[in-house]
Image 1 (tube, rainbow, N blue to C red):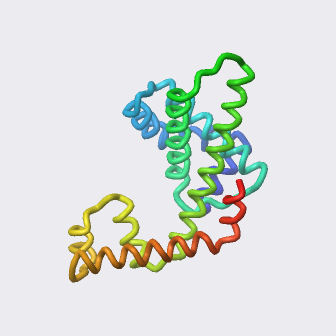
Image 2: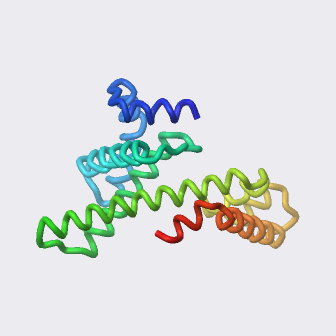
Length: 187
């Protein structure tokens, strides 16, 4: 948590030493992801910079707590921005500056909304039991039920499927019971 605050404050105060750490630690991963997904190094650098700006603006406007590792949070923001960029380029053709500004503003708003939803999901996961965290992490990584049975010691795949179902149901309940859920649902 203190590490995350260090990065957020560095972004607010333009601390070039700490920001360069972010570049060194996270940008290579972003470059690899973007290049592997129909982009260039320049695209990756643009997405990385855009994510830093969005996080800074959002934090300045409404301070928040990042419960995961900051570099993972930043990488996820970059991935979301790149996916949105790919979707936009394949669906929309813009003819004027006004249209481009509209889509840019819409993209930024969607990226922030998506990030807030991710934070709500992570908060609900943190409230889940250790067993549910383990099984859901495996499930969301598309690990086979056979491996889940072996790793977590369940008696059969049926038991593992039932446990996944119950944990997903509990996770949904935790998300929907959060006051943040209704705010995000309205957007």
